[in-house]
Length: 136
Image (cartoon, rainbow, N blue to C red; front, side, top):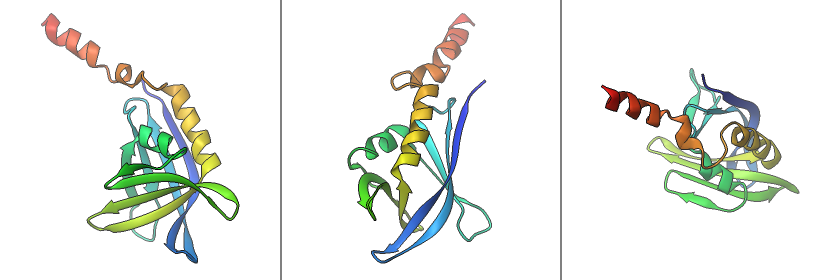
């Protein structure tokens, strides 16, 4: 059996330095997929937009700029509050999203309690599958 850690929160889609719009989102983590975090954005469409990337990238991005290519994450201040920015790029377009740092950090701490760093591989059941394969 696996554990799920989820959090609903409101992100801001940054349209320009002066303009942003709220975007409801859900952060998800599953212990049977321990290296990944999943974010679903509820935008004006029939179905949400889903992004999946490394949990370690988000953990590091809360403290310092990291990532390259499709996903980049970094901490900053906005209106005197600590926030985390996520720059997402795809063939369909680019988005810059702002999340409250305290909410993201609290959610990440819960995921790290469920699957501590360095123990992710043990969650995948690879050793059990290999034992079964070799026993045949």
